[in-house]
Image 1 (cartoon, rainbow, N blue to C red):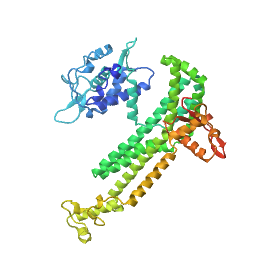
Image 2 (image 1 turned 120 degrees about the horizontal axis):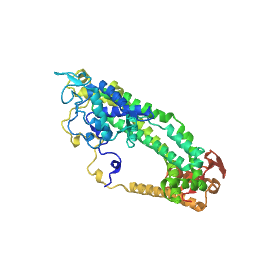
Image 3 (image 1 turned 45 degrees about the vertical axis):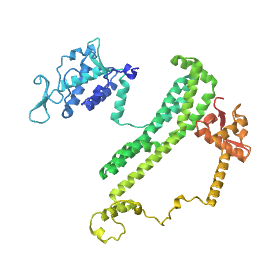
Image 4 (image 1 turned 30 degrees about the horizontal axis):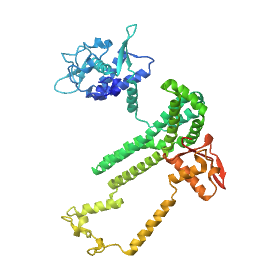
Length: 505
């Protein structure tokens, strides 16, 4: 079985983030990476140790003792540059060094029956040694004997992920669409089309992923809201709605999505440019020739990959609207449910459900002023039986098993025949495809003037546009030449100036 990512990553790469002090390992990695970004080369080891010491001194009360003994980061995985650190004795993060009193700078930490001492330098060395041994960082001795700490090549993406989580996940929508537009509609795409298509595809996929994450986030908050409501925890419901959902979803993501017009502004131009590039054989050949140098495969395969990526970009942008509709629906469901739950807590008598709740509590309280003066016809029931069901009228025995009347059978047969007749006349995908084929779609690109000759053909044309824009299994694609909003006239109808091209033609 293939080792997968661990053919590149060290086997103990994630071990620091699984330890008892994992929050401190993560914080130190973030601290290091911010310093690394501010410098043009690796950081001197003494600077790293000093910053680690400052952090550990501030958080010494929350450090936990880790197990002593042989550690994977003290084994042969430690580079030769770290050999000088092997002589440092094992250290109890929560107490004093193993082996005696503190030889260096020490100060009291914590409370208890005995005084504990904390050596921040030794703790900083131990944390750094573990991170080096796990493969997050590496040490190097320069020609002038300066010891520097660098990040590893495989660790860089994980540093970026930690930084994003630490700073707060910010969902981007506008930048993705703008980047797709600038990649495909700029001048660079003419000379370096393969690079621009790759970048545009990556940005289009990132946009869809962001929308999916937002949709799932709303669903997660909705599930938590229902759980808090079941536990009857009003304070938790209010915190969930106003502190968490409003801050993390509404303010940071949903409002920015709904107030941005970049998706609708640039999408039509992107569709037009994608159509132009797919039909520009010279550009496809030229870009495929350059793409060959990267993939090391033949030109035809590279050309097909470019065409596939352009079609993916178009399809991804077409799927934005359904995703936005799903997000709107989930947000409306969450807002409605949250509002009803909060109102039930704050003003229980403002809703029918709340009034019923008050009434039931009063009736089953075993007394009280309300239950004594309230006239009602509800009584306690010890068990449920068929007689507990209230019906408007008593049904006679055998009513449910009696055969239907001839009139009902005739009406049902007539309704079934009408339904089947409507289904025969329905303009399904198969019918519209066959109609387009009959109009010459298998041999040429169809224009509005070729299709619209009267009312019936106009309706079929509208169906063809709807299927082409929304259904992946439709054999025809809708193209807008030049990306401009132009109109065409056909048989007295004013329609968009579009083309219907059979896929693969």
